Image 1 (tube, rainbow, N blue to C red):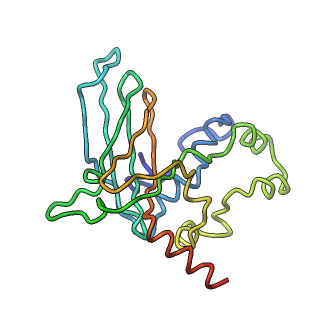
Image 2: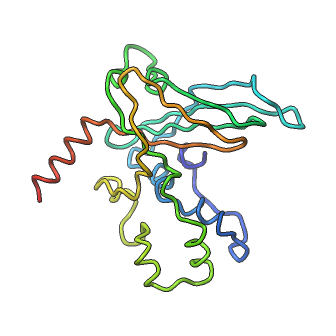
Length: 206
């Protein structure tokens, strides 16, 4: 959530006791790229449902967030704070909501990238925590923001910042996902026509 609302990303835990699982979450370039997007625009909440299973304290809700990204991309987050798994969905009309007028994006087709899909494995994260060698880092091919800033990587379309491609949303369609209890699913939507035009340009330059 901190990433999609452009808040500073700070680690408040003890690095000496950081678990491999936590590292795979914190060191996820596809999610960090949302926070470092050149547009620097916060996502907004477009849906809230409190009629869900509550926890022992009577708390629980589900939310959907959506925001603009560089190059016409879109971030969509399904937040499940209910006390059970929830099937969630958002139509393109809801995702590209406008205060006035129509959203032309509703009539277009979108590639969907799961921003958790290609995150580091716990096995590789454990190697890093144990003091992995330079060769190990090179073999992983993990995004290095020291060598290339996130802004530069986003502008160049570095695939490591996009997450895992999982399918498409057709014109006037909906994005759907089953979200586990007390978790969040985050997606990057990319316009297929714009993506194809960019790829054609890259091939021409080669």
